Amino acid sequence: QVQLVESGGGLVQAGGSLTLSCAASGRTFSTYDMGWYRQAPGKEREFVATIRGSGSKAIYADSVKGRFTISRDNTKNMVYLQMNSLKPEDTAIYYCNARHPLLVGSDYWGQGTQVTVSS
Image (cartoon, rainbow, N blue to C red; front, side, top):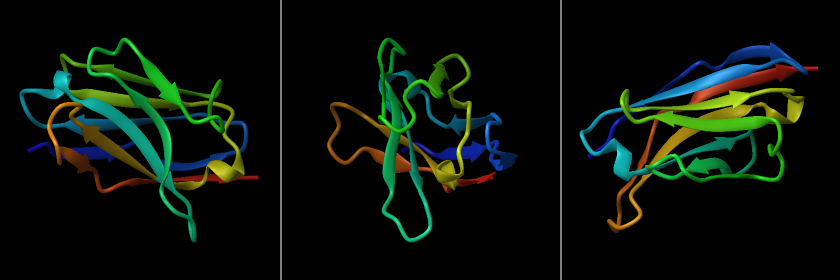
């Protein structure tokens, strides 16, 4: 079982930056792929970024590539999303996700944190 708690959301002007954090429980954090997803009002949840357990590889949605950076600190059970050059279309609830690559059904979500980008 993994519990996830996001923080760091807020209101920012277009062009600004925010860093989201996700604190994870559990002693096997480094074995989980960690990701960020987002859901805007009236839209489905969409993938933003993911990072392997070792931190060796990260993948980004095209819409955020070059602006967002996902990272993790396995010594602190933390994953981060650095968001730069924010746009109004980045406004959404951002969710942290933990998924084990080998364990079926090991898919955990945080409660989400609101990010609002004003124009």
